[in-house]
Image (cartoon, rainbow, N blue to C red; front, side, top):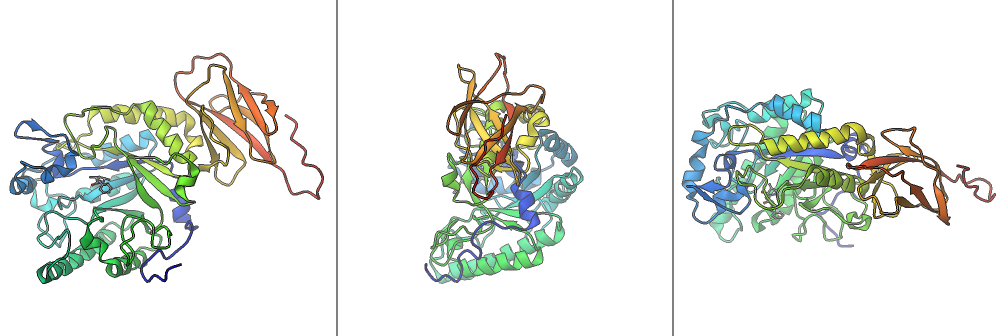
Length: 450
Ligand SMILES: C[C@@H]1N[C@@H](C(=O)NCc2ccccc2)[C@H](O)[C@@H]1O
């Protein structure tokens, strides 16, 4: 082990109630909204292919003209209550909302810069509207904050000169001021989702960022901060120089999902996902593959089966309305969640070997296991390999407990559940009530009689 002053301050998962609630969310909503939604991936009639929220950084975009977009920001169709209702109906249990993206435009009236919603035709505090609306729907709020700030004159990608260093000291104070301001203005938020922390300038601030994280946690006990906020004094990010996770959960799963339980190293984690291949902010031309409702439901089940949360991104338009394609997906996912949410909420890795037909989840702290089925085999037989000394007491459809199964034992700890010929067109869930052998006084473990 390497002696570290600014590495991880905890090994293993947090065990407090706030984090246990976070662990059980299962499904969340990400919202990327800001000035970039006005051009929506196009400029002077030319459609660009990069991620729309990065348009300011693309060749050919006049940065000063982009920066003046705050004077045209007037989202007449913005309705935070409508957004929160859509999220509620989808079954999202938390939302991560962009307070400030890389372009530096603040959706709250920050005292520390003029580049905010206050200096736009809209004027009002959008972060407050979102926090209040989602609180009212009982959906917890996490605030996204980009450390990298292209608008701020003191931002630097690296610190090479004395001038850089003096400017970046001002930038560090500005960043701290904004974070304390957010935690003070919006005391109900449960966490901060940091981004834009990969450049050398910030990576070199191990001590400052460590102290700032400690200060934020003191200001807001229970605050949830992921692994992307800070680097250790050797510049190691997400995992410190001893391989220990920084922060409360792993934040590296951006547009990708772990494939096996070993990939998550026993940590909490979330996966943040776009509907197109890589568009977070509104892009009018959604090109390429658009993930279907069933694909997104499968991603949700896969994340929960590996102990994480799935966070689906929405990119509202420049006028503040959510695009129809996203509304439709939210409805489709919501319809499925209404029937099957029991297999997603407060569930975790089940400890069963993965099978081809889909995913196992376990209701946290119980012997109740769910089979979330996506791929019915031609044989109609769903294979189950139970962990040692685990019997299946009951097996039945979540949607209809009358429809039960008698597992056929095909070898030691291996069973088939034989599905009736059916035309399931949507993923479905089977409940397994299991029984773990108790450590009785050495008598042979008796399989529960089915
Ligand atoms: C959540 C997303 N993160 C922003 C982004 O720049 N991702 C690209 C990226 C992802 C991982 C390491 C470096 C850079 C995207 O613009 C979204 O805000």
